[in-house]
Image 1 (cartoon, protein in one colour):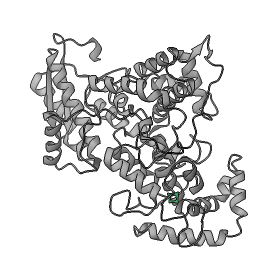
Image 2 (cartoon, protein in one colour):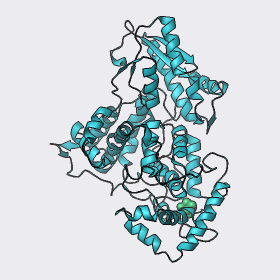
Image 3 (cartoon, protein in one colour):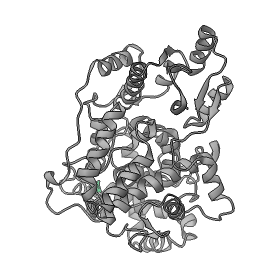
Image 4 (tube, protein in one colour):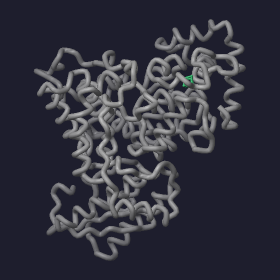
Length: 484
Ligand code: SF4
């Protein structure tokens, strides 16, 4: 919409909704990122000559109504929003909608792709996207003859931690806009947690573009091989940390993919890194967006594994944990409002899955706690990918793993109070114990899943399974008391 707007023909309406701000307990860096980006954009539009009606209203609806009344606006136009609640609000307030161009695959196009398919494999969608947009393709075939470099990209962390290997993030000093946002959050009584913003996250288009360039030049060449690795002395490794900019519109996924393509074609980025990253942006991100709209509001309420346990106190900052992997990941989240995808999937979500945490509570927590969180991001990622609460509609098997996986992919287990090899005993690793207990708990369901047969069989044949199950019950009690 803004692409065709001019100061002579359009006035811009922007609304800060107190209701929205007070609707969750946000990570302070997320709340700041959203508001500071909005305010900075208003300043930029004014400097381009636009008249901006910037409203601090009780709700988006009341802001729209007040704008209409004051300016006698005949038409209020918005781009299709990124949530069902936003869509409902705009329709209820008779706002005209223009088609969203924020993603490469519009929900209508995703729906057309999905129609008539028995399965919705991300890999199939990703290949269709590669063909459609031509990234890393020659004559409609993958440029190297291979679609997938996951095997090369699953290496454990390098043997000795080498801080020079991982390029340092850009930091932009905070200014008066940032300070005003932080003091307004305080004044409005918005509930926040986490470390104060440090300038890590860009809140303007130019700073976001600078971070994109920096990622492609410095980090992308070494992104692939260790993209699934986790280190206690480095929270970002070679990850891009660009999702929040695409989610809010400071960057467009097309320019991100274009830069990856041209860095690969110019020979500075190896194929495994280029493909691994493109898979995240062109594949996973667009797939999750399509699934959010396709499966409707009921999808977010699913709880096929009947998991009802409350969020662990450590997740809420109400207790500490002796699990070094969880403690380090929560610290990274507290410090930056961000952790990389394997910490999200294989530490936080994996733990929630095997401990039987309520998927809706987990979704809300992740939505509010990450700078790149949003309903469309977290519902499919938590309900489908992380907690298998959709019974396998999205991922054909649950992403459950014990301490052995975490030990292979991280340096967390060294120095942990627990022993990742033990499933019973005082120092048994909660991931290991709960993993086997999870398989036994859901034996009937997973025995029918051919991708799970081997694990279910192994769990059944554990000589000490009865002791493991007793240990798991005791651990879950300790978790409830915030003592794990
Ligand atoms: Fe996590 Fe278990 Fe390893 Fe400790 S031993 S870091 S709890 S996986």
